[in-house]
Length: 480
Image 1: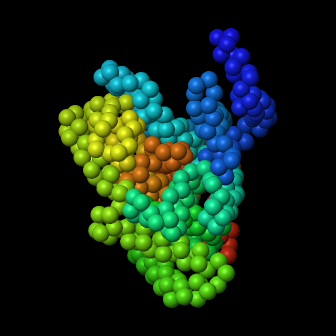
Image 2: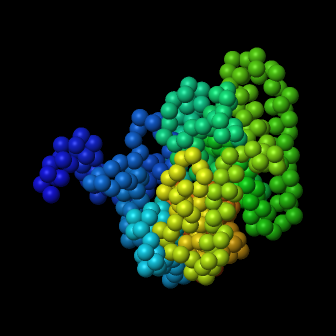
Image 3: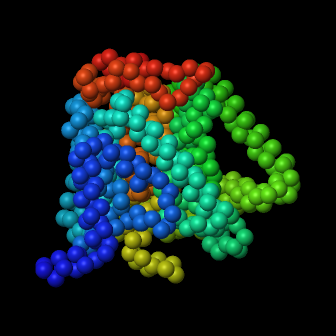
């Protein structure tokens, strides 16, 4: 123990972490709301690679935002009240992850793999509880302002990375569907800000379709988010935005919503045609070759990747079909009701791939098949009841905030068929807080006493050049 302690003291990184931790504790004791803002900035911001985002202490690895998430949860749970209905939903999620962890232990699944399976989904449940409590408060408004700063900073770092090759925390790869690129393709930039930006696009498009805000009024969020999503060259964005648009049309319950959706689609198509026509001129301008490279990459990987031929040549898609679904489906049928517990390896270590990792035995890109093999139909039903159904029940009482967060959450849930949001970082936290804020508008889910609600909260969108004050009395803002 003494030797271990001396090792920690003489470790430079540990010493810096201890000093930084002491300062943070002092600061948070003076202003605990700062933990909420720091969680956002550290979890959802694109940072250069030289800035560390993951730390190790005493053999335990954690991301920079995780301690602040825990502090945020404690602060929100103490500061804001919650209804019995809201608490029940959170308890169902916690029960799901704890009960099937115990089941996994009883089946002899490795404890460390059980922890790896449930760690991020538990963060999702914590964020869900936070979202349920802060919806409609002044804190949620300040969180939105902080997130906007994060978006613009992330867009700037992403632009620098794309144009200069600045290494960032995240993933960089050629924007080709083939396993081996030529080196001439645009670079895909996937960072902590990628899926938060997709959530923003789902929100602003949903608000526009429902007639709650124009695209121009939300441009301070939409512009940086659009750039970040485009240079990620991810087909998931098309899926998420499309499902969010359908959600908005259903929520609006008006034929004009469909007209607005078609108008937005026509505008996007017109802009795309204009860009294609202007491509020869762009090549001749300073920086135009870079822009053309991005456009061609988007056309090839995102749009071309949606075709049958594109999927057939996409190594990532083929991996899902041949290396995951092929093994998942039989194991699901082996125990369809309760699954095999968390920490269960659903396929062997060696499956014909050149590179073999035991992580591949436990992880799957399709979250719903992953949840089925771990928890069965019962576990999936609990997840749907606690987190998914409230998003649709809330449609009967959708204000601007609930509509925006609901569309974003539904978009991310749709993406979870091909990229598991509850199993990712920071997407598990993002999905949880978005679903919580939206679910707070569902019938019977009023989470605070009147004294906990600000008298007036202005939504940070302008519609027809007017500020929209949402007055609160004994109900949540945006529920009228």
